[in-house]
Image (cartoon, rainbow, N blue to C red; front, side):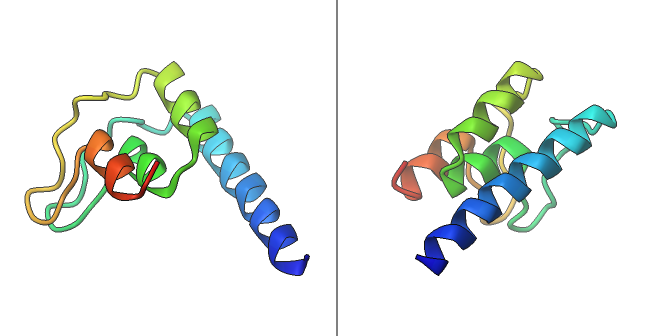
Length: 84
């Protein structure tokens, strides 16, 4: 029960942080770090956060954005590898 509440809190916190950053004009297409970095859409896809994926897409996140040069994944690859 406690674990379930923590996961729910994490989802709300993550959603709230994303919304706050978008309200402050965060760049949804900021490039990923060269080694293993993730763009916001790639990270949300990998983590299985469909609400955040939808929010980022509504803000024109690039579904075809290039992954990090080293150890990177596209949003589709990240979602697939994460089992989503």
